Length: 127
Image (tube, rainbow, N blue to C red; front, side, top):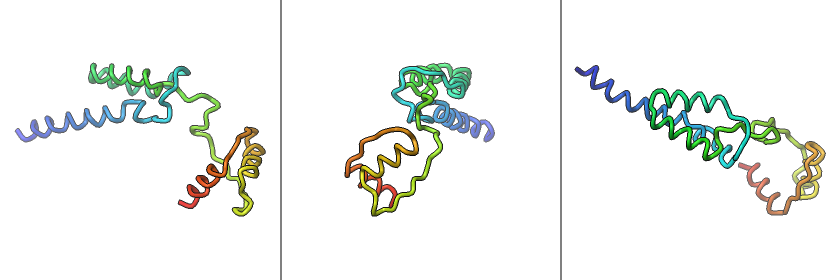
């Protein structure tokens, strides 16, 4: 009898855990807001498995992932998952202009930085 009680408790816990991990919106929050692109097979498989096990939550997972755009792979020019680069600049020489020039030299991308941006970068790097 205790085996059945444990199973009755364990099944909803496992279902809740599966619901939390099978939704692309929760796994890839940085993808929210995308409106089109290539579909991520990993998210489709997770949502599909959820659909097979629990019809209503699986359908909801598909709807949410398509609505938020989390089911789509990030664009190729996205920096999500890109390898970071370290640019060495002496802290006393960091100005918006020198930092923008260094970034342009390394990436080919021209950006405009303000003193506030540089202050935020300094504060973030000191954490």
